[in-house]
Image (cartoon, rainbow, N blue to C red):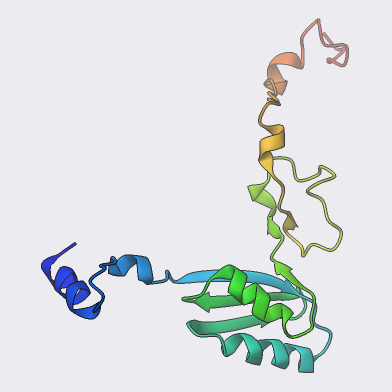
Length: 153
């Protein structure tokens, strides 16, 4: 904390209690939501409502994916609450890119409604105890212990 911050905190609070200015500032963040939108009117309603929040820098909507991206100095739970106030079904974006999941074809991760290239976000803590190792397929290809090995040899 520099001298300027100290003086501004000291002068800014009349009650004598000092708070760090970094605690009161919000971080710039991006909040992604999945909002059910059927028509252009729904899109405009959601965009107008979310743009009215304090601290919102931009609102981007992809109607085909039902995805709303809000960028600004906002909190995720406040954005979600405001999106639900429109009467639309809203949730935090439940999908992650396909490459971010260890086992994308498990029942928990696969979702038919997910956009192309995405799977449902799953908790990897359930699979921490399971370690799957795959041997080099070229070393076992001609092995006598492998019943599916090449029968030419």
